[in-house]
Amino acid sequence: MKRTTPLLSAFVITLALSACSGAKRGMEGAVPVEPGSRPGSEQTSDRRAEMMRLFMEATQARLTGRPTEALQKYQRCLKLEPSNGAVLFELAKLYHVGQNPSQAVEYARQAVASDKANIWYRFLLADLYRESNRPGDAVDVYKGILQQWPDRFEVYLDLAAAYAFAGKPDESVKVYGDVEKRFGLGEELIAHAFNTYMGARNWTAAEQLLQRALKNEPDDPEYAGMLAEVYDDQGLQEKALEQYQRALALDPSNSLLRISLAEHYYTNGRMEDAYRELGEAFLDPGLDVDAKMQVLIGFFEMTENEGEKPDDRPELIRRSYALIDALEQAHPESGKPFTIRGDFLLRDGKIAEARDAFKKALTLEKDRYPIHQQVLQLDLQLGDHEGLVRDADAAAELFPTSPEPYLFKGIGLSQLARYDEAIEALVIGRDLVVDDPPLTAQFWSSLGEAYNSAKQFDKSDKAYDKALALIPDDATTLNNYAYYLSVRGEQLEKAERMSKRSNELAPGQPSYQDTYAWVLFRSKKFAEARTWMEKAIAGSPDPDGELLEHHADILFELGETAAALEQWKLAKARGGASDLIDRKINEARRVE
Image (spheres, rainbow, N blue to C red):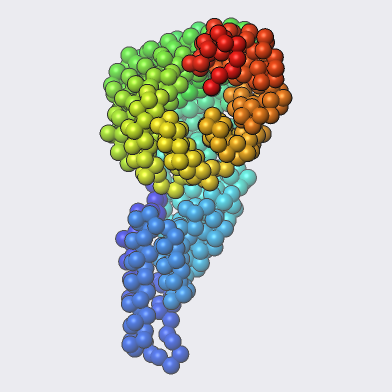
């Protein structure tokens, strides 16, 4: 069985206390004795007490998610007792979690050196060597373990795998052979050796292993299926198909085998056969839903691009939806079929249908926070602000410490002109954010929007300034802040700098170009304003009334009254122009 070193906390504490007390088994160098003192003296006793206290505090910090504090206190332990294996062991684990593999290996190596009789220290060192892509060093550690503990079955398996990944396949095969002779050809050995051989592409050894397994158990469908995989990987299609058929004849209800056979058919262009096997497998409620989800995720990735033939992608998408139907039928109690349906619909541009699918998923699995976030995003995308507020309230009730639902709620309320409620929601959410500057900036930016709409302009400016202090180059915040200043005719130099920067960050955005043109217009730089406004119109496939009205205002100030009048009329026809549009048309002049 695989070791799980994180479960050893109580054992490690016992080791530490044993080391500190001097009552130890196989541990070298307990508490160092100061010059001039003798064991059992008051000074030595104080040192031991300090060591025990620090170790316990460090372990408590580690277990409660405070790794930095734990690291510092273990280091202080090490100063008191440099060769304490338990401390070295804990430091190795902390550095491993902290993504510092070289330091982790060094502490684990020292832990082993401090107590060669401790098998757990060796296991950790071997695992660290393997994760650091040093399988040769791992081999040496496993061999050392077996010299002291020759009956550790699982260590032989680890040794064989380490040999394989060290590029020594013959040694790997030999170890597995020795294990087979000593312990017999059991299920665990077969599975472990098979995975090792397949990973190392040692198909000869894998085939021989499974032939022996089938000789012992000719009616085992799993071994026949595994042998089929060996043949499939080598491109031996007929042999693979023969073994798949043999396996299914032995176990017709094995839906995992059907998925493997479907993959075989698909690879060899037998599409109808592949879909038939998948259809049967997907309708089996006994097959775990996650195995089916993996197949659909593969289909999703394949349908991201066009196939070799024009009809490939539409056909694969059609088949995918049919499989999702089967998945929903087989697992009516699971929300996962609806989430994968939502993913496909969203990718295919069917936003409203996608939202419906995700909402159905929530009726079955309301505790899945990412689905709530997806629904909120789609509410916003669809412009359903009433729905956005309702769904945000539902998410906030289930996840009261998560800030995002309050952000969505605040945005929805702002769009509904319920500004005081929006501000309240945004303040609550902002205060829930912990160590996430981009999210905090989003809250401040949304507050800037809400305060501006509520005509609390000083608070709006302060909120936008705080957002930009956190994320200075957020193009959207720069654009919106600049636009609101220009509308008010305030701080126009600052507005011009911000709007120019937003266009540098996101060139070619018509809305940002429109803002820059309007800032220039308010600064009476009419010629420059015209250039940027015409860029915005050229970049908009269907310019709205607001854009065209701005263009007309600029033309009017440049003395082109007739052209301005035509643009005002067009702006009114398009919709979205200001309340002053009729006066501008009737009076043939710009009014404010």
